[in-house]
Amino acid sequence: MCGIVGYTGPKEAYPIVITGLKRLEYRGYDSTGVALLNSGLKVYKKKGRVAELEESILGKDLHAHTGIGHTRWATHGEPSDRNAHPHTSASGKLAMIHNGIIENYAQLKKELGNKGYVFTSDTDTEVLLNFIEDIKENNQCDLEEAVRVALKRVTGAYVILLLDADSPDTIIAARKGSPLVIGVGKGEHFLGSDASPMLEYTKEVVYVNDYELAIVRPNELILKNLGNEKITPFVTKLDMELAEIEKGGYDHFMLKEIFEQPSTIHDCLRGRLDATAGTITMSGIQNNIEHFKNAQRIIMVACGTSWHAALLAEYIIEELCRIPVEVEYASEFRYRNPIVNKGDIIVAISQSGETADTLVAIERAKENGAIIFGVVNVVGSSIARISDGGAYTHAGPEIGVASTKAFTGQLAVLIMMALKIAKEKGTISDERYKNLLLELDAVPEKVNAILKNADALKAIALKYKGASDALYLGRGYNFPIALEGALKLKEISYIHAEGYPAAEMKHGPIALVDENLPVVFIATKDSYHEKIVSNIQEIKARKGKVIAVITEGDEIIPGMADDVFYIPEADEIIAPMLSTIPMQLLSYYVGIAKGVDVDKPRNLAKSVTVE
Ligand code: M6R
Image 1 (cartoon, rainbow, N blue to C red):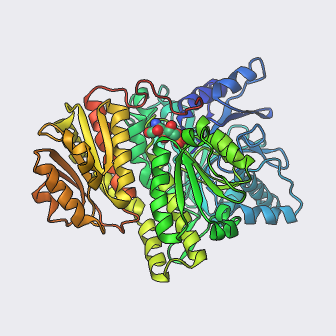
Image 2: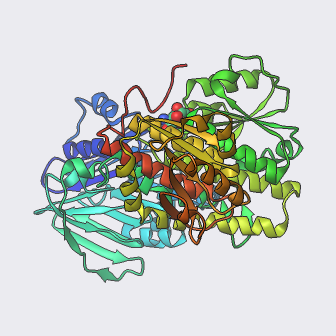
Image 3: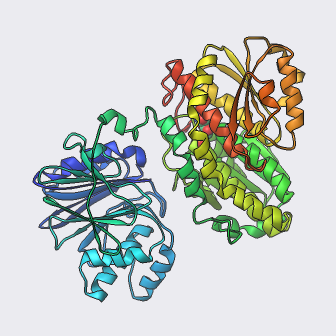
């Protein structure tokens, strides 16, 4: 998730590129860089936001009519000046920016290393760039041909933009998996991750498809496939305003992030889960596998939504790996006097990787000799750096304050962790293991199916938006989802909501039930189904309003609930990744109906760096 911009034409390139980068900053803001092509290449790049780069290069020679720019969300290599894009090739003649992940970069790096290439960054991008240059020199071909040859060997996702010092007005671009839009102006072309950098100049755009390569000059746009056949560019007229497109066409970052989940979950699984081969590749676990296998217990520390992910992980790890798990609020753990022994495994879960309580909690545990394993979204963040090992969730930048796609990313990582450890420990049968891998692999598609039915939740939200309280109930694997559903509703609709284990409500909360109380049941088909049906009856007997999230084909609950929302069938361990999606949408639509600024609800901040 990075932002890329390019321009070639009669105008000054720099102002267009830098303004475009500001609009794409939602895609990542670990570092920023530009490459300008005038008489030779000029590259300016820096760790941090676009504004920081802009200030730092005031007064420099920024004159050029062709340029590219990048705002980074780090994947390979921590955020730093040297890992910032654009990267320059060994000869210094090529500059490249990249959005995506080159999965076989390690192999390519090794091959280039054997030929004497030296790398100045930790990125996969620099590897691909030098691979392209190596082909260009060895095959004595032009850059376009070298790109084509190189991309046929590459696995992963990319949009790349390339400048060549020997071709002063040309940008070569290629795409697979990551977005690329080319704006067609009069004697000029614009390139971007979305159309926002070009909106004030042209409404005519070409959406480049996977496996296409573009040769872009002021008066010329040539599209080709990787077989060197020309493709006629299909020009589309944009019907959008700038404010909309900054959020990728969504009304709010939160909604955009909810709808991104099929691809963010896919990104998280990609390169790790191979359901056909029956393998899970997670180097962070593999490097510590003996510790995990022999662990007497695992302690999980986190806050908020991340704590809910930890709670679900407790259920799953205890079931599959037979290792005792304790789940701790980081803010409590850091101040009490917990028993942490040398060799204990602490799993720290955090979207931002900067939550102060979680950070201090693991610092303390580390002092006592514990092994810290981070499950973090933001690459190079403090928690990621202090961890002894870990696994990134790869959900991309999450801008909306309410965590959505980061949560499903955490669940995907934690489930893969549990499966890998269970397999290594021999606490799971081959059949169950294989089946769960296939189930996990199918999650993005099932999430997509749920999202297609979002309007049904909008209707339910409008019905209950006037409520002053709500109860969320679930059992087993769905109990943490009840807690998460209640947190989401509180955060962005300001309705008081409580999450409870469904059976526990008889021990107090049932006193709240009357004809005005909406009670959300997460009641998917699992080993608790009959029990939760009884709990629904108990609420209905007291005239509570029941909204039930149930599995497709359930014929019992629709007859007793006031409103139902169906989700696809899934194994009970996997089902929470699906049942949490209607929780997110329900709170979003209630928040919107109440006029709340859902991306920035009152009193909250995205990253809680104070205790
Ligand atoms: O960045 P972290 O995951 O460490 O943040 C933890 C909580 O602050 C966070 O999950 C918070 O509860 C969210 N606003 C929930 O939507």
